[in-house]
Length: 590
Image 1: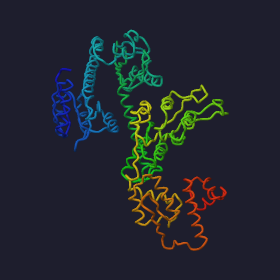
Image 2 (image 1 turned 120 degrees about the vertical axis):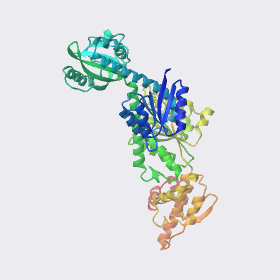
Image 3 (image 1 turned 60 degrees about the horizontal axis):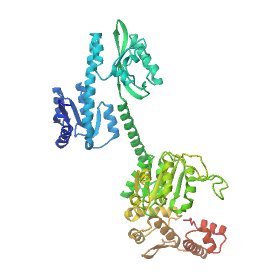
Image 4 (image 1 turned 180 degrees about the vertical axis):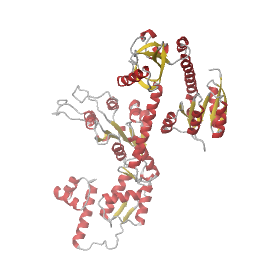
């Protein structure tokens, strides 16, 4: 493109206007630019009618891009109008494209600007040529035939439901080597079946001299099998003394694809907004996660975005930060809710059992395989497979998992049948997976498949504002009563100042002991006695015995890591009797 272009830039920033001008010139356009930033200035500029292109910012103080778009449309000038913006907004893009803008670009990604201008200038030139052709029809049929070969749009003439004439562009568009392949053939046979009947009815109506739609969009199948979209204009004319229909068509597949992508992105945003509105009404909790601190608000938003897609997620966090809770929230908010959520602790499975645990086995696969046994992938089919400690799985298992989740399927041990599960992977780790890839303990292709959306859970020491909320929650869920919930300022201060190396899991155990024993036991801080509210003293011997029994049971449970069977044997009690006492004392197992 060598001619000098006159470009009208609707922009309040001189710097941004200069950047646009510099981009045009660097990409080979000889451009003369003029900047306006108000409605009055734009009206005056449009009145000059000397512009080849309009480039408008979407967001102007007091005068926005939509108003600029309306002024351009009212002027009747058939020139490209391209909207630019500083931020990506799919809903905005859909709006401006529907209002008539030819393209929508982001300011920091202007590499598409010159190609867009060149494309739209070509289209505008073709439109003007087409108008010349249509006007010439009224004057001379001979001139019509000559001119139709000079424009890029496909042109055909139909009469009695058949093609009388098509130009070369029309034949090429529909996948035919020359025009003679179509002359005499039934018109509109390339439209998909569900649109043929309605379009043929319009054509018959126009051929009969009646009124009908003057344009339509349709999906076509070309002679070469290509599927594409066309935009078509219909016009009734007189040809050799009889009614005929002039049809001009152009390939709009790129435009339809752009609309489809924008609609998908808008739908994704609507889904995210719905999730945020429905699940964040109380921003101090999200699913089973609790916290109102800024770090947790960021986590909630990432969880909502992850739930709106089916991409792989890796949840990073120290031990005890609630990685499985985040994974469950993603599953419960996603389209897979209602389907299985299967948690797997990869680090707890012996290496020799990993394959059979994940993929299952068939009867007779090995000694002791007396029947078919489904694996984790079978159980998670249709739902979410949560892989905790993902960094622990071997390279060989990574290869097989990658094949399974990418659609290649897997075979249970001892079977040749191939299963293709529909699963979503959510992984968790407290390791640096980037370092694992560099060290060669994790395959790069496996990493990039699962590591689409990383979510980092903060340790409890970085979200101390959430400790009172967590304490209140644990007191309620551990069976504490109103008196139990009373915690004096000194005790709460101790909790807030503590380092919490075990994070939320450690806090939960501390509160359990606090409710049971009446003391706050923290590593390196000594013991803090609970403040018993007035009227809360033990009233009789029976109550004192129950209180002492509960203390003994908690200490025994702590000693046996809350294993109920081992604790019952340690106390020399029948298991059924011990379980009943746990229930009476509202002692939940860990």
